[in-house]
Length: 420
Image (cartoon, rainbow, N blue to C red):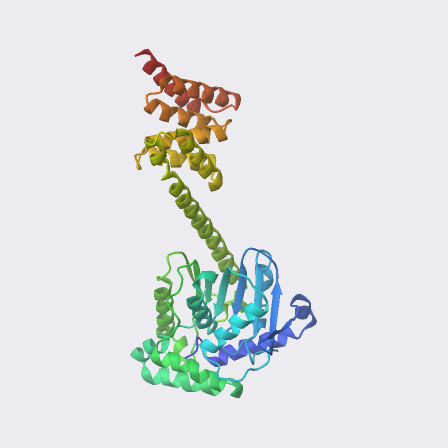
């Protein structure tokens, strides 16, 4: 079964197509035809940003279903909405319209349009299958995914457990509502639901994800899927699907039906923006971890240099590694204490905190931290000078009594060590 009864799906598609012919919609949605493998594809591209958001519509739907969402997202990202082959204004293509074939078409369009990752994939209904297939095949290109009341291949398996006769009736009605040109593709989709399996190239990447689920109540539902039992199974499958990801949000709405992007577009916009934000944070963490690993790989050379009496070379390696890392004063300070404590490398820590103090001459914290490692190395006179410098800088910058109190306490320790 498709993600909703096809009668409702096609009603939404007809409304969207009718609205797309109005002058106002044309003014806001510039049409663009692009040649993809010798076929014309209707693709709309707008906006700019570090991420490219690609929209996949549901079964038998074209790009116009995203008209209430795409312009808002385009304020902070490049947005791409398109109509698959044989949909909307896009030219039909020969061959079977399987999930894999549709993914191949998307791959070819990305190349033809010169779209660059990272991608945020947004899939509604059957489009959820398509973004999953693409993400499994190209995990490195995908930074996040948004599933808008997306299809789940196990829904009919679950519905048959409850009432096989009503489930079979749903399938017959869906087939009867399908326009002739989509019946061949429907057979491939139905085969997925019959088996309860969606075959993809591999596992999905663990990227930030938003799952949107409709829980709208239906009075006297025509389809079993829209009955309380059917909706409960639908929501349960979405919850199970969402649990495989470590980062994201699952939002359930009773204020919209299956076409959330049309009925409650702000919810979809917010979900996309949240995934972009989470993806940005994840990328920052990845780059930070990468820079840390590179820095420590360089610092691992230092003990051997010190052992060989090459202190100047060791200091140079540390200074160059810190400079290349682009880390802040606070980052380097934390790394220095990590070397001093958990990693038990006090000599390397001393060189790191020294380089930090030299690089950030007007940082009272950097001067004090270097003083502490010197004091621990029983270099009280040098430590005393560092603490005095930290106090002078802090006083000039108007730091709090608490901060100054800590520096003065360290200075007292250094003086006490010198007096012994």
